[in-house]
Length: 302
Image (cartoon, rainbow, N blue to C red; front, side):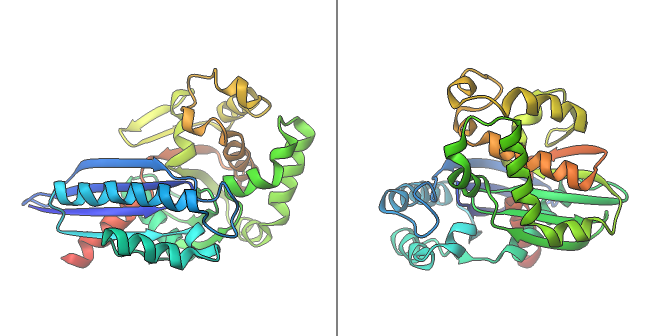
């Protein structure tokens, strides 16, 4: 049996998934790892020394796991912060020199394709037209698709840490501030909105990350990695979270501690996407770019 790993180096989070392919072709996950590295908390101009140390420490752990599980082949992709920061390429070289893990920095369109593949593998796509979104720290990837393939894809630099740096001085938010942030998002996604207007979007699909917070709120499980809820149910949850202080969110058990700081920005992005798409249902899958990478890795290997 062969083992494969996908390493997704995001702006806020480093992920790794290790799978085993059986002799009959079945794919089993044998390890999932997630670490919040917060590369852009000091800003997007460059990866600061503390963030470099955090990233290196995590990648050293990933190296140990690759060895522990005798991984035959892996992919490691750097995304938004690696693309945008002045020392992103240098940071990738440092990680590679210290760990031996080769890192490729991919563009937003490549990232969007992998996210789409992950959503497709999860069975998240519905008949008609879907708007898929992946909320990252530095960027948000939007994909319009039918049940088979991509129609439109683009990455926008409006991730949750980007919004945090821009609007954190206005916290806690009221309805007028949320309206201003929504207007900011509208102004910066004109092409996306023009494309959406060409299609009747039936489903907003959210992949992994901040979306998983919704799992405990009136959701209906489809399988172990896919669930859905109505836009109205999301709106109820939004109202209970969006206008809170960070200290108040610390007391909300349904929000993981590591997401309490930035979850308001993620929810505003989801609200924005529901409003511009007029989607009838919100589907959430834990599959995303890393599962798309695994699919690519196994397909190319065989």
